[in-house]
Image (cartoon, rainbow, N blue to C red; front, side):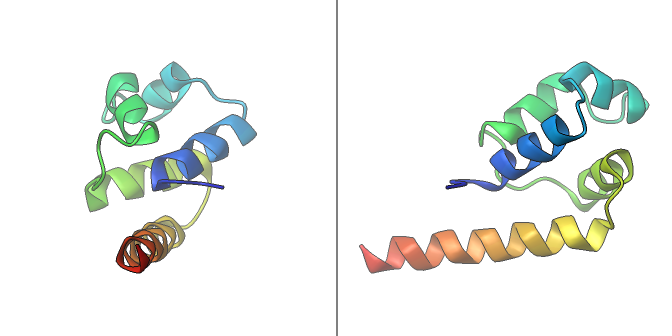
Length: 84
C-alpha cells in the first residue's frame, strides 16, 4: 500500500527506469535529485504546481493527473486519520 504520494512518484520513476539523477538532468536541473528524494520519502509533503508540471513532463503524464492523484491521496490519508 502506498502510504504517501512520494511513493507513487518513486514507483513511476522506477517504472520509467530513471534514476534520481536522470530526472534531475531531464528536468534541466529545475528539480534536484535531493529534492526529488525528499518528495519520494515523504519529507516534502506539498510540492509546488511547478514541480508537478516538470515531473509530469519528465514522466510523460498529464500534469493534472499527478495533481489529481496527489489531492485524492491526501484526502484519503486525512480520512483515515479521522477514523482513528
